[in-house]
Amino acid sequence: MMLGFDAAEYALIHSLIARGKLPVLARLMQRGCTGRLNSPASYYSGAVWPTFYTGQAPPWHGIYHNKLWRPSRMCCVVPDDLAFLARPFWESFGGSGIRSCIADIPLILGKPRPIDGVYLGGWATHDPVSNGSTPCNLWRELRREFGARVMPRENFGPQDADSLQQLFGELRRATEQFQRVALSLLQRQAWDFSCIVFGAAHRAGHYLWDLGEVQDPQRLDATRRALLEGAVELVYEWIDHAFGRLIEGLGSDVVVLVFSLHGMGPNSGWSDLVPAVLDARTASLSRPIARKGVLYSLRQRLRSNALRRLARAIPPAMAAKLVPLWSARMFDWPRTAFFPLPMDLTAYMRVNLKGRERDGIVEPGAGYEQVCAELETFFLGLRDASTGDAIVRETLRAYAQAPLDAPQREGLPDLIVRWGELRTRDVAALTCATLPGYTYQVPGRLPSGRSGNHTPIGWFVATGPGIPAATQLPVQDILDLAPTALHYLGFGLSPSLHGRRLPFETARP
Image 1: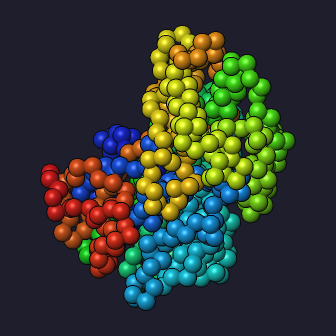
Image 2: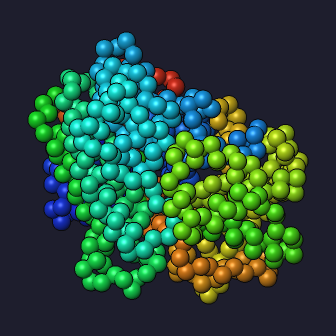
Image 3: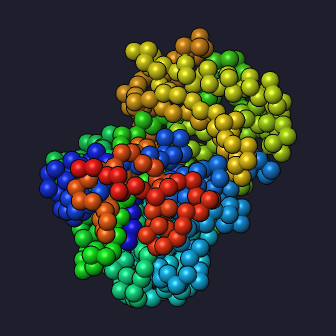
């Protein structure tokens, strides 16, 4: 049994255990082995779940955001199972006799495919890329038994006291409902492998990590403030309780592996502002700012006004069809040498490279190197105007450094920008050490409304036959989770997997 705790912060988990708030995880840690897990979230926060379920690194599966650039079409697309062939390891069990129970693993592309067992997708996930079930009537049965799913679509954008309190209530009801759904799935038949993921901690971490992004802080009276300041911890407690219900009565021969693929912490917020930061750069160089398409400009405004409520009402399938339309006219391509891609924790920059992009204008070789170097110099030169402290931690040339034989190399960003510790709310203005005259006034609130964002460290707790009690492994990798599951199910290590099974036999107290 694998139980996912989506985006649960390692340090907060241990703090809550020390305070007696997570009794189920505390007992599992005493009875088994634990450890931290490296993940690609330092650069690709959206790649962690595809990396887990494929057992392959991002240049092989290619899924690192919910909107991905397609150079042959000069637009972004919502990834689907036609363009991306990445499939979960449990879909390869066919004919082996292994009976599976799969529920709510995020970012699996396409509808759940037939397996020997039950397969539910998108019921209570933070990232509902695809909703459905196998058998196909399972969703309808669950809806009749438990009601319509409670987990709402993400309310991306500025938040006020009312919206955060509403989210808090929705996450509680969604967690309780999904606990009942998961128990129902587990009880439908005997099973050999189950993987069930709770998504409420992910959503809570983004919007309830702290109250620094609330638009109307004057409406936070003492009672409401106390409730919302403790919201993330309460969500963790609810999920811990749900785990306890799911593992009740399991035999001693069952391996239980609880895991989180990345964590959550304060949101630096700089990725929200990259388009405006780049426009300020263009203005400081006395160049005309690139003309943006009407749909792209409208989408940018939807982040910060009431029209985003209308956008939320658009069905997901229709919203996916709109992505290529607005992104195809993001910029005036014949005059655009580089451009930002949709991003989250880190910034993604793409060069309009001739021979790779359909409408590319930058020459390969020296021309490409010059554009990348100019971008690196600019981002690394960004400073807090008051203190001179750097904003950027490091940059990575992802496309150039990816293996040439990686099947999804062509879709990777050319430059990834990792931000430092400074948050936007702590900086009034930016300057650039390498661009005299550059200045940018930092807004007081983030367009995304997100007070929290990801940290790169995941973790696991495992109990079961042969797993030593009260022990800890050195840092491993999320690539090791799929080989570990396959090992306990009697499969050998496939050469297509990039990890190895977790070495529990080397654990130490």
